[in-house]
Image 1 (cartoon, rainbow, N blue to C red):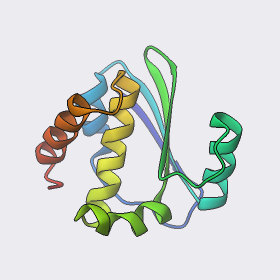
Image 2 (cartoon, one colour):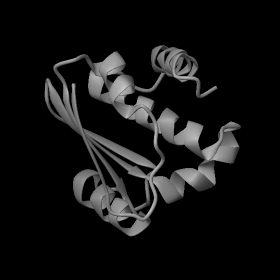
Image 3 (cartoon, helix red, strand yellow):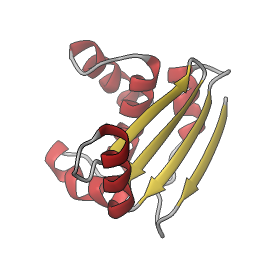
Length: 125
């Protein structure tokens, strides 16, 4: 597993991202994780998806073994309380969510079960 983490904001939450990604995506997956601010997240959402709002996470599969995840940490911080999670746990949840999308999961019961499994596995819930 090769994971590149970068951030364009002043803060980012430290979690075992490599272990989480490897557990979900496998050892051969190449993943880029970027923490971005609200304006950049909104622009990226608009240019890539045609949606004009600030998302908490965007995930982009580049091919079968490469992908990118962008997390807007300030947006996620304001949403964490709605899910009864700490800011750190919610960022972890979003990362898991993005990895599952890269793995091919769509929103629904199967994805929710996997999210709960990984939240528990990594001590986030």
